Image (cartoon, rainbow, N blue to C red; front, side, top):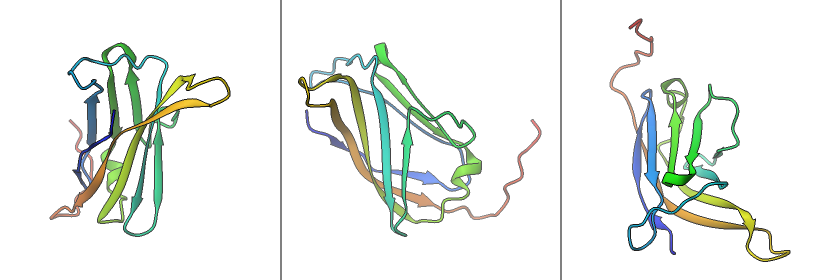
Length: 132
């Protein structure tokens, strides 16, 4: 199955959530239990950043897979998006299987989406967290 193009914005200084459900060409959910995911972007300033479901530093981001439902969720806190110093980036989101493609061939890797990310800048510089 070919990867789909999906372009999206990230609002600088706001919490970001990318959530999708992996489905086949007939719209059936694909069970991705045991898989891991990687999203890598390269910015217009020449910086490459990688987010993986292996991450343990939740102050940076949360990237999870709910295998039976095919759901993949990437969460980036406002404190992190506030530091983004680029205008756009190109990205790939891959799924890595826990099963070898064939004996000796390594794990199966599938790029499922790709595209462009555009940063939307704020009109104010207020970054103080409210106490609510």
